[in-house]
Image (tube, rainbow, N blue to C red):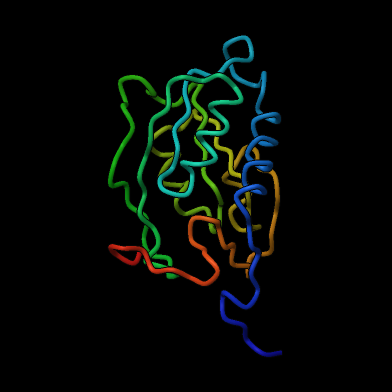
Length: 167
């Protein structure tokens, strides 16, 4: 068997597909919150969780949206995750009634850090890989561990480097 580079076993996600999948995630989470089915807030894991979190918040009529920023990638190389921006902890507290949304769970290392910050939050991702599945409460689509997901914000007709930075 020939070893493949990450981009050689790719799953390409369009904006339309991401929107459909994030709406499906919202439908799955609807009426599942602890307050008569309602959720208090959404916390997006930046950067990939921001678009799906916005869609989930809109679909579920959640007006309080915050972010947690965990850096765990340098381009396509995973590193030790660390929180570089926390949500308003006075509001989110231990996470009760809070939905934490991300685009993807890969190994689960990022979510380990997030769960330590908000241990009672409900964590949902649009896509999940097998190693990270135990870290999420809900997801829509599973892909194999060796699949690289190409999100629409990373793509044009060809890969486009960001204006600043590489991570």
